[in-house]
Length: 469
Image 1 (cartoon, rainbow, N blue to C red):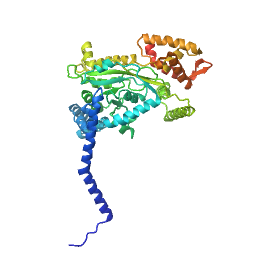
Image 2 (image 1 turned 120 degrees about the vertical axis):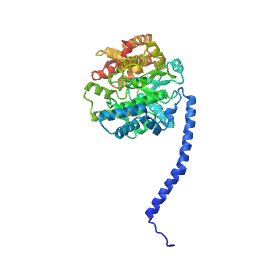
Image 3 (image 1 turned 180 degrees about the horizontal axis):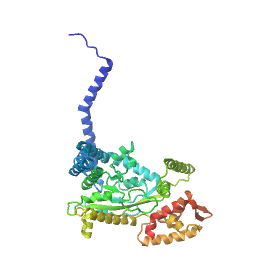
C-alpha cells in the first residue's frame, strides 16, 4: 500500500503541461481576455469621439458570432434548401458549404490594428511613394449626412494603392470595409487584410448559394451602418479610361434599402489619380495582349526591373518619389432623395426592372466620380504630348498649350492640382516625370515622345480625356 508509484519522466512532463494549460485556460486566459477587451472598448469609445462616422456595433462584434448569424440567416437557410433540391445533395452538406462561405467572407476587424498599425502603414507607404494631396472635397455635403446613415464610398480603380490611399485619406472619417478579390487570399496577407475589416469576394462566381451568402453579408453590413468602399469597375483600368460599372455589390445593398425606413443609404463619389501608377506597364502588357494574359515570368521580370531602376535612382539622388497622388471627395448621393426624385423602387420592382434601376444609378454615380478626377501634372502634360504625337515641341510650345488647357479645365469645373500655386512649376514637374521615365525625350529644351512609349503616354492622357472632350 505504501510502495512508491514510479511514473515515467515523459508522462510526468505531459501531465504537468496539461495541468498548466488547464490552469491558464480556466483562470488566466479569461482574465487576460477581459483586460484586453476592456482596453479595446475604451479605445473604440475614444475613437468614436473623433471620427466623423462612428464605428457600429456590427463592425466590432466577434467574428464567430457574425459567422453564426450569417449562416443561420433565414434567407441563407432558404437558399440552402433550394440548393439541396437543385443539386440533389444532403442538407448537412449544403449547410457545411454555407458555413464555409460565411467563414471565407466575414472579416475579423481589429480596431487597434486598423487605427494603429493600419493607419501607420497606410500613411508611411503613401507618403514614401507619393506626394499625397486632396484637391477637392465637398465637406459641407459630407458633414450634412445624417449620423444614422449607411455610407458607401464609390471609387474609380487605378491601382492597388487605391486601398491604401483612401484608407489614409479617410482615417479621420471612419474605418473602411473593402471588398477584396481572391488575389489577397494568401498567407499571411489574408489574415492581415481580414483583421483590417476587408471581406473577400469571388469575382464572377456562378454559385447561387455563395452569392446568396455574400449578398446577405453585404446587406447586413449596410443595414448595420458599416462604412464601406467599393470599386464598381470591378478591376484596375487597363487603358487609363474610366470603365463600365458592374452593379453586383450595389445591387446587394439596394435590395434591402427601404426609402421609408429610419436610416438613409448614402453614396459618396471618390476619385483618385496618380502621376505614376505602380502597375502601369503590367496593366498595359495585359491590355496589348488582348485575351492572352502576360506570363508569371513577364510580370516578375517587369516588377524586379521596376524595383531595380528606382533603387538606382535613389542611389544617384535622382528619385523624386512617384510624383503626386490625389483623392477627391464628391457630393454625397442620398438614396432617400434619389428614390423620391426618380420614383425608383429598388425593393418592390421585379428583377429586370431593379437591375435597370441599379444600372442607371451606377452610371450616374460613376459619372459623378469621373467629374471629380484630379488633373495632375503628368496627366496634363501627357495629354498635350499625346495630341501632338510625332511632333517635336519646345518648352514654350508646351507651356502655351498647358496654360490654355488648364484654363479650359478650370472653366469647365475640373479640379486641377497646381503644386505651390505655380503653373510654370506644374509644367516642369509633369515634364520631369515623363522624361525621367524615358517616355519623353528632351534635347536642348525640345521634347518629343519616344515612339515605343506612346501607349503608356496615352494611358495617362486618357485618365483625364473625359474632362476635356
